[in-house]
Length: 397
Image (tube, rainbow, N blue to C red):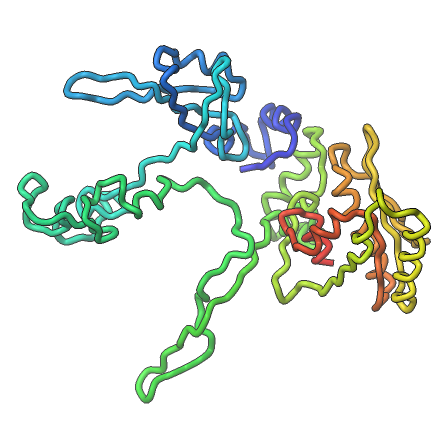
């Protein structure tokens, strides 16, 4: 499964017939690239399903919900719409013609065993010795014969196990979708912590706590990894999928941008560097403060850091070009870089800070200070917003 960043790359990949010496067929995943939502309105009763596909550009299919009363099937004014949206959830509102309609996420009915009536497995995989009653949760009789008090086997409340009002039912969302690596996930340690207990006999390992693990994206061990490429150049080893397919990607005329430009490892708490941020100049407003006052305050601020190696950073964006730079210039390294055309000024400002930090790291400056005019970049660093890849990259330096 490949995750693409551009529509043009998708068109090129779908034309590929061979990859790594193997015949392949590339197709767009119809599950992960779509989301479903439910709409309901009294004025939609006379609408046809194909009308939603024609009128709403993001809708690729629509299905009306029907209810059965006796032998008769009655059409409702509720529809399930499938949106061509990545990633989910679906939009919160759509316009059916001139009518704005609220959209709520479509939730699949959770899997419930028809033998023990618990969630999470089916009848074929049930381990219960006897079949339980859906009303009282006890064995020995059928649902139609039950005369006992209602008791749910899932939450122990006074309702049948198949009731939609059950909190366990509402807490489940059907079959879970495919998920990526869980960054910063907290789990119990699979191994013992080393503490031992017991007097005589077998010694038992005691789990005394939890451990963090921080997942690395698989691409770090494949494409754009020089040690990996050198290792798998040997004839007695099999290169990983990423190394095998890199020549094919180049031949397909797809932009071979580094994958680590898109994914960035989130630093563990013990790996984070202590970054001190000074926001004292933000107390002065541009509209109320003269340039002379700013110069005086900034001069006083620089006096506090006279023993530090300083750098000034900036990021800018014109109609077609986004770039980042810093000063002073390192004679051996470029002091500016051009970013992707779709980059924002915010990313350019963070990239400028990253360039300055790399400059400090190369020259082994132990005490350094960076001056920037981007308040949003400083706030992102202060809040440790690691979903911004440039923020995580700075903390990883």
